[in-house]
Image (cartoon, rainbow, N blue to C red; front, side, top):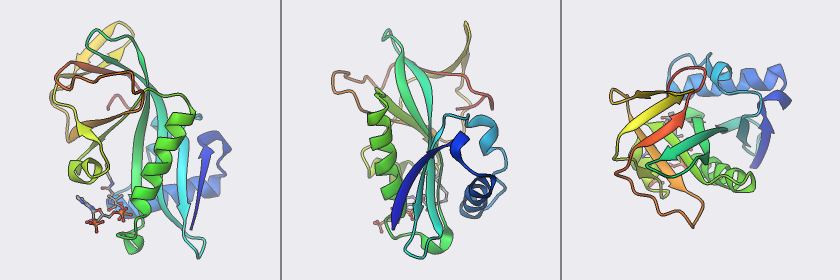
Length: 179
Ligand SMILES: CC(C)(COP(=O)(O)OP(=O)(O)OC[C@H]1O[C@@H](n2cnc3c(N)ncnc32)[C@H](O)[C@@H]1OP(=O)(O)O)[C@@H](O)C(=O)NCCC(=O)NCCS
């Protein structure tokens, strides 16, 4: 297998189509809006199996997190984690997640985040569910997101930060208006 990383603006339309097809198959519903909220600098982690098929994917987008009174933190936000249904259970999902962690470290991120319906899977890789209040910041406006579907999880990268999971976590806004 081979893992490669490309920014959104480096992807050919064929590769973009392949990512959307993979995500739609894995999630069981159309995933057409991915490139509306993952900007040109989003970093796609792609795993091709030995036959060359795109088999697993995730994408890292830079956002800002504010936790309690802590100043802004650079956050690598993970979306579109998907393994082709016929290739699941082979360790590919964990492999792209491990690579996304290396990508975030190399970019100098402080923390990683994601929202999910399957916290157990991420928990097995060291991710922790956020227990405190959640909000999204758009300029000076902060919208509480207590009605969030799924859960928000974080993974600390900067060892100097001691995370208090009961504090208020606010993330920068993005085009789809969601986490
Ligand atoms: C979640 C997903 C990416 C895992 O990909 P994968 O390549 O099969 O993952 P891995 O092979 O690295 O890991 C498989 C392990 O995760 C476990 N797992 C898979 N889905 C799980 C789930 N929904 N909840 C808990 N554990 C799960 C498997 O039981 C397996 O456990 P094992 O290693 O003890 O056998 C894949 O199942 C998928 O694409 N699902 C649909 C899309 C999705 O839900 N994405 C995440 C949304 S945030």
